Each structure stands twice: as structure tokens, then as C-alpha cells.
Length: 307
Image 1: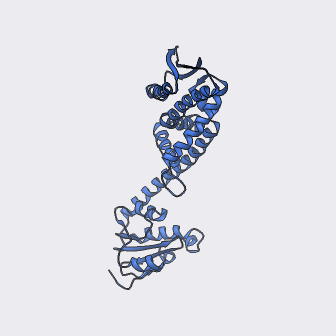
Image 2: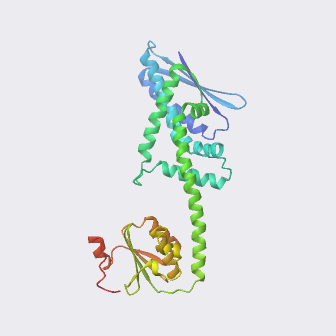
Image 3: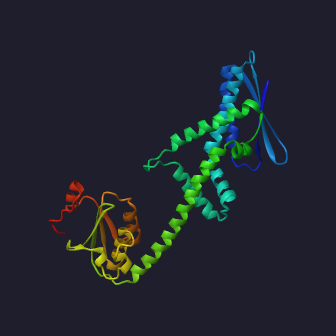
């Protein structure tokens, strides 16, 4: 007979899903002629799942490997499906001393978002979880080769060190992004308040966004506006000591248009996103008007017709 015992804290909120997963993943062993029984024991703080296995015929190395594989699959699927978000919260509290519940919730959710997109912004949650499950399963099988008792939180914290560090690195990035976003929100609120009190100097401004090096401003008559020549632009900006995007943004604010039309094919580009947030609801994206046709097709503006 083979005995494997897994213990979890009574405070574990996902005990019921673990119990269901354990029984469902061990049930197929019967078809493999391996009988099993799960007995639950408890003490003051912990719940113990004592799993007993005995083959119908002889006990071989293959039998033991099959048992290890099934019990390891239980652990891997449980951690991936039910524990990952809890782990992210734990790292935030223990490793980064984040105590505000709202911040914990926001950062952990953003971390989970970052984990599940690739460098191109494509969703990879299913594939990532499969890889994570395989990695955890391999660690568990190695563990049960030598041990027959496992503490769930101890296994996560000490046997998954590589994955713990990977989670930690993504969380660190998420924290940086979170604080930058908060600062941006405060900055945008200030700009929106400033614009609400400023006299509107132009009925309409067009911004043509071809690429990062080609951002062009036009007034309502399609006369080009040089951002560095706009009244109110700081001298250091006019001397190009800061990025052109910053100069352009400051020029737009100084021009204080009643409406901004953003001609672009990249609605989620950071400068387009920023302008939409600052001038909302008076900023609109366009990629199909007759004036866009030239630069969308050739990379050059074509404004032979007027609005």
C-alpha cells in the first residue's frame, strides 16, 4: 500500500474545490486497477487528506509513477486554477509591504493581466497556464519521489522558488506601472481642470499621426501649425530639450481647442490614448475620412479637400 498525505490550513478558502479536484483526478485510477481511498483528518489548525493506494495486482515502479502522476496533477491544477491570485496577493503583502486593500486588489489584477499577454499584446492565458501546470506537476512528481507528506503552502513557497521569483518580477513591474498610472491620472485631472477654465481659442484642431516621427497639427482650415511656434510653449521645449511628443501635447493644451480630431490607424498608441483622456469627450478618432486617404495609403498627408 502507498500512502501520500497532503495538508492544508483550515483557513484555506478553497478547501472545497481542492476536495472535489482530488476525488475527480484520482477516480480514473480504478480503471488502471489501482484502488484508492481518501481519509480526511484534522487538528486545531490543519486539514489532512490522507490518500491510500493499493494495486489490484503487484506493486511495481510503473504503479508508483502512475500514482505520483495523478496526485501531482491534482496539486498543479489546484494551484493554477485556485491559488495563483492568492499567491500574487501574498507576495504583494509579504515582499512589498502593500497593505491597502484597494491597492492590493488593483495591482494583483493588473499583474494577472500582464501575466496573460505576450509582448505583442495577444492573450496567452490558456497556453501560459498549461506551461505553469506542467512545471508545477514536474516539481510535485520530483517531490513525491522521496517524500509522502506535503504541506500545500510550504510546497508553493519553497519548492516553486523559480515560479515565485517569476511572479515577483511581474508584480514589481505591475507596481511601477500602477504608480505611474496613478500619477498620470492626477496629472490628467489637473490638465482637464485647467482646460475647463481656459478660454477656447480654436473651434477645431486636427492631429495627424502617421508614426512616432510624424505628428502633425492643423487648424480647422487645414493650415499646418508648428507646435514650437505656439504661444505659451516654454523656451526649453522650443529648443527641443524635451521629446517632440511633449511639445505637441503642450501645444494642444495651449491652443485649447473646442474639439480635437485624431487622424490615426493606431487608436491605442500612447500619445493618442493620452490626448483622448485629456480632451474627452471632445477628442474623436478618425481613420477613414477623405483627408486620411493620402497618408494612410502613402504615409503622406493629402489634404486637397477641406471640411
